Length: 398
Image (tube, rainbow, N blue to C red; front, side, top):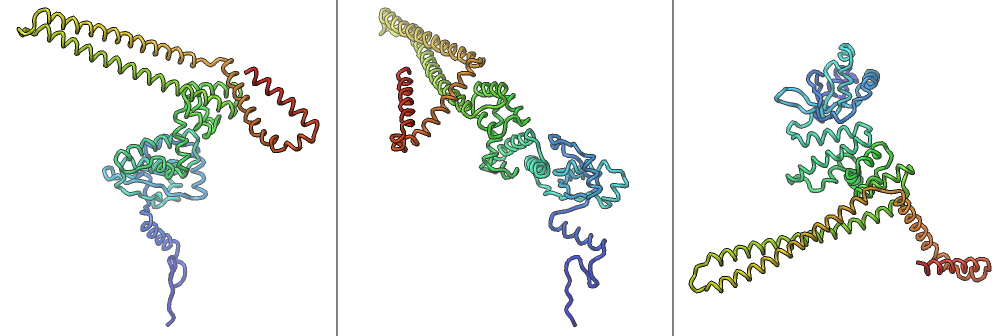
């Protein structure tokens, strides 16, 4: 007797009929993906999906009616309510809910096909799954992408505190299918001033620029904003000049903090000395031991009072120094807040000078390596001589 061969979806007489084939596919899907058909009434939206746009629902409904549901929904079962909460497929769900009863019954007679996620998922992991799922199926705006990274950062910080993960940016990169470096760029972009942040959202600047600008202080960012508003863009040389000034200000700020901390520590030391001297004076005055004559007590009190007076003067001097430091810093910050046209011109001039010097440095080796050519060409030799004289004149006048 010939050996019979069967494969999934077939019978002895051939391919399973539609009902049998569909049933077999459903069983296979359930086993592999925890797949389930769920009536739309048993599915509820996820409030954490409100961040995402629900535009184009009508067009999506028409697409599903014509082409079918290309991607299943992803849900979590809530045993307390006996309902399924959406993780992925919010727009598809709303599109299906807009169908007429007949359209719904014809297209989803057994319910909406869903992947049921593990029920032991906690709130943090649920939101991470939701963000990741939405990112996979949507073409998000820059603003939404930034929100995704920012929210994942908060969620993974909570998981790190519990010791569940180590590298936050690596986890974010994995969830959003981006590089770890790119994840860090999004994080740095959150340090932008509001105006530059809005420019990033509206594609006025790109993520690479946002990463560079976000590393600078607020005043530097305001200067960058002024240049962009005036010229529509910012040259790299201008950015480098602003960055250099920002770094100088950062060094000054560190020095200011160092001086302020030192002076504050000295004031605290003087206050401690004064308290100890006051205690000593009180102790001497209250000491009735016969071994101490009144003259001895007076001398000790006088000595302690002089030491206390000296400490108080030194403390007052340090306090005046601290106030002076604070006033100087305040005036400096006020000057930095307002960016004048002359300051912008100065930055632009520095940028052009740095470009010129870089160009000269890069081309100097070409001149040096072609000395023989210059020697044998009278016109080139004259031009080099003129350049030498101009450089000497410039250096002499610096």
